[in-house]
Image 1 (cartoon, rainbow, N blue to C red):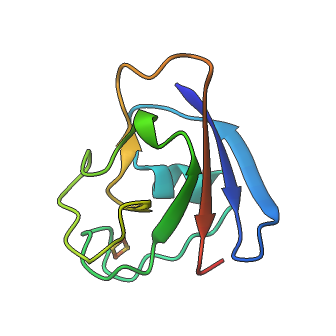
Image 2 (cartoon, rainbow, N blue to C red):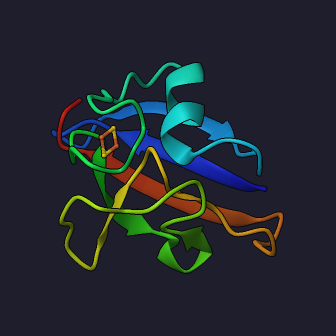
Length: 101
Ligand code: FES
């Protein structure tokens, strides 16, 4: 579990929620009101769901829900396949910014 904050491309907060370990970060964001777009059905292939990680990268498992195929920078994740590490502390804080929000 972790607290996830999602920002749009201008840095404005779009959603903030407590994570679960059952869904990708992108799916959790969508359910909680941050409509990060998916174009490949969450297959890690298109890059549309890409987010820059601004805080808490150490708590994210980039390929937890599938292979991260689309090219990303070291400080980015494909939110459709990235998840929270099972051993993330309760007070972990994660901040991501979607370039397509
Ligand atoms: S939705 Fe296509 S890479 Fe995530």
